[in-house]
Image 1 (spheres, rainbow, N blue to C red):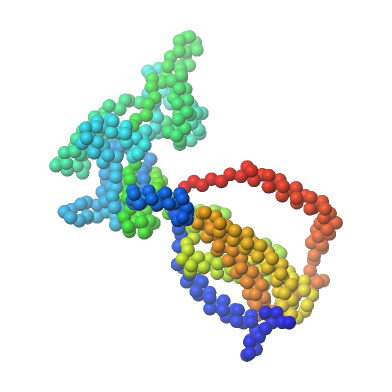
Image 2: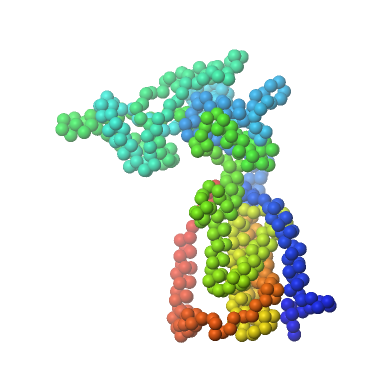
Length: 536
């Protein structure tokens, strides 16, 4: 009985011709589908609609609807920073009669700490109390201010170095000495008729003038989170004494006080409208451009929020293919996918020892990955952080199966080019079916996951295993029939190393089995220490 590839149509054409013609027809459709692929990494949509937690979130959002907002600040942003008002004007524009002039088409509104303080002042809340209530929302404490005694000031730069040494000892090596100030509020942009704005201006001016003097400021990552470390550092500063105390027998303090200034750090809340939510990349680009226009350096700008997180995840997916932030010679970070392709090609060349077979193997591997990924937009899906690993996985699986078939062809011992290909395909059919089938079943089991990206990965990857089997067992032999070559003679193939390894494994089968069983048990026992963590 003839195999599938040996069958011919009534006109005498082989099945391989029709397969290649079908692939040539489908390739433009695949490319068209790939052009419409979308990235979606909204963590809020990872849970299915029928999940209890997702239902609670949906219920909450229906009761308290909210637009997409992001939190924005920069390194030296403070409550009275004049750039805040200029930045808001760049984003919101100027309201003239019943329409807005200028501004970004992606921004609905911008909230600043002064808005909250103005409302509280109208209710009779003092500005100091208003600032205290706003702490943790749009205001922060900023760096730690250290005020020296007269003895400490006499020590000059040595005292500053001592403070920095203690800071790095308690807060970490990233602790630094900085120079920031809470500037007096400016009147630029204030309307004469806006009585509440002038009232806030006067209150803030009085508040800034009441800030105690200090000699040095210390900033360190997480200093407001690791409170115990910060308090230990402050205690060490309070115990700092002059070196002369050891000889005089009188302890002379060098640090008079340490304190934080409420409002030394500030942030603004930016809301996106429908246009901004549909095109987050353009909205974030407008925000960055507005920040630069008011004198904020790009490296000093910090943004957070769901729009920023989703865009960053999408960029991470794109950077897996090509990241222009790294030089071309740094290929592991420039393009991990391209690096994996290069490694696969090199290893295929080493194993197959044939440019022809290497090109054919890589062609069917890429075809499999393209076909599987093109199904994602064709079925209404989108790529995410989990699904992005599917192409690399399918390339590896298809390459493995294709090399398997090529080795059967090389060792067929049949001189006829066509017969040797048919023989290799028939011999490799069952092993490849078992390998692809079991892999597809394992990946398909992920559909029971409650996380949508994991479930999508299981569905598309299991379908990809079927495509991989088809490409390796039918497309590759069809290409080999059109690019004909005789299998190499047995005498020309040096397999001594493999025969030696195979003989060793066969002669020590029991020992090898015990070693593998022991390794399996050890790995299984180690799973109890396995921990997962997701930070967005």
